Amino acid sequence: MSSSKKLVVIGGGAAGFFCAVNAARLNPGLKVVIIEKTNKILSKVKVSGGGRCNITHACFDITEMSKKYPRGSNFVKKAYHQFFTTDTIKWFEDRGVKLKTEEDGRIFPVTDSSQTIIDCLLNEVNNYSVEIMMNAEVKSVVYKDSYFELMLSGFASERHRLLTTDYLCIACGGYPKSSMFEWIKELGHSVESPLPSLFTFNIPGHPITKLMGITVENVRVKIVSSKLEQTGPLLITHWGLSGPAILKLSAWGAKELSAMNYEFKILINWLPVFNEQQLAERFQSLRFELASQKILNKNPFGLPQRLWEYLLDRSGVSNEKRWADIPAREQNKFIRNLCACEFDVKGKTTFKEEFVTAGGLKLNEIDHNSMMSKKVPNLFFAGEIMDVDGVTGGFNFQHAWTSGYIAAKNIAAQSI
Image (cartoon, rainbow, N blue to C red; front, side):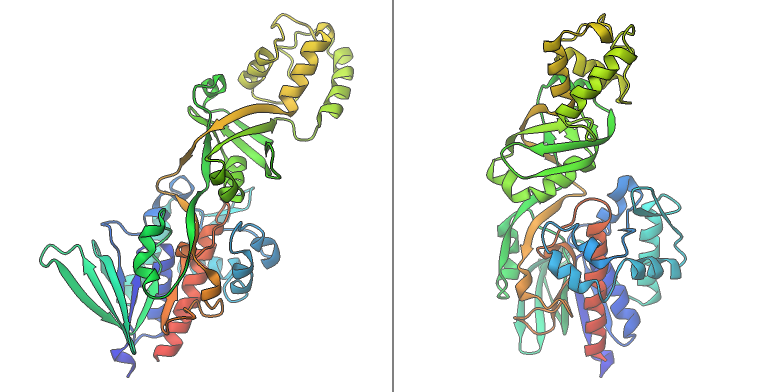
């Protein structure tokens, strides 16, 4: 009986591959096919973490881990009891992939190459005879009593192709537009409108963009007129601001910032260990300690020198001034720019390959125990197609592995 059963996985990304190879391994009698609409597989795996593939995060507490998801935190909290970071690490290491944990908790292959992860997954595809169909886009899915009928396009030899399957797992990643979900909505599912998440802030033509390439290891960024704020590293780019602090802020503020049409004010505290009052007190002692030294040459806070010079210039402090001689007005302005430097953000830039969407299939229509639809039997979901998204740092991949594995385990058990 089992030999006649078939699983089709829509989407050749991390979640789709993980579902396919685990289902094929857990039930060797199951025929498994991955359908990918483009001519590339595992493309996000390839580019993630600067081409090194940040597969998960070294967080081993489920409650703490679930706090890293602006949307879907309760859903992943329940799912992680079945397959968590420890399971991901073991799964890859059991297959010969050596991993390392960096200071910030991100976990990478020791090779520092995403190709290591891709090769591991492709090896599993070969070991368990998973078929991959490229350039095959799903146009429609119909559920007929006990099986699914998929209409595909993208074949040179024939305009459309019909495919049938007993089990279907939709793992095609996030869609940027609601209209792209139509073929899934036709199966009876509802969608939380998609919005960009994990984007950088544009500050067009601002003088600070001349400092592009500078990283400040720890800053606090606050969005004015909101409760949104984050701390972490910040990167100055030729179009504005990026880095983990900005990306996390964009994830938590995805809906609020969209409502502002991506035009808002931010305040940056370049020295988050101080507030303005504390820094003013520190300045009083520095005026004595460094009295005869030029403020330009003596930066006691460890900020990058070019940023220090920019902030002095912005505050109207002369390069020739000694610490003892800064006029009160300029000093106050300098302290303000160090603790609450204001910028007008006008627009965003998303990482095209690493694009993450907030929004997707509504989670109350999916069973977190099995990843199966509550509306259609034998229909499963994995990865970013669901309304789950994490901040940067390996959290989105962990959701992909977990949801892919849970779907695989349940499909394999049902199909035996």
